[in-house]
Length: 136
Image (cartoon, rainbow, N blue to C red; front, side, top):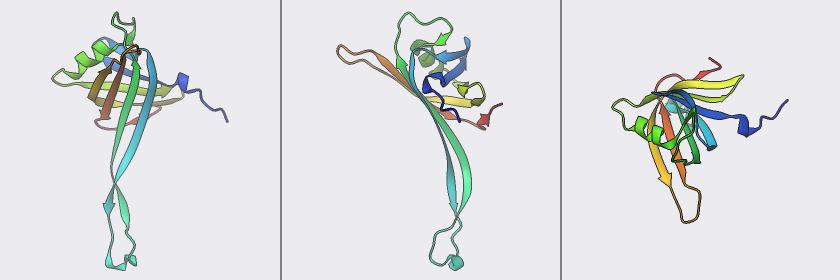
C-alpha cells in the first residue's frame, strides 16, 4: 500500500481560460455526503431506522494571492470573475492520475484575506450540481 503525498492531490477548474489547477493552492478538500430518510415504523422496536436519500458533494481550497497571475493556473481574479457570471457552473477535478473525481459545480463562496505582514490568501468553496464521477 502506498500512502499518497497530499502535495500531489490537486483541485482544478475549467473556466473560460480552459482547465487549470488553482494557483498557489495550499489546501484542497472534497466532501461527499448523503441525506437520510426516516423509515422508522412501529415495529422498529424503539430504534430509528433510515434509508439513503440524496447525495451531495462539495469542494474547497485555499491558496496564496498573486496579483500578476500565474500562467496556466486559475488565479484569484479569474475565480472571482467566474463566480459573478450569470451561470457560474464550472467543471471540477479533484485528485491525481488514478484517483480522480470529476463533476460540475457552482462556486458558492470566494474570499480574500490579508492580515498585517501576512501572506494574502484566498478561499473558494464549490457545491456540486449533479453526479460526481470517480476515475471518469
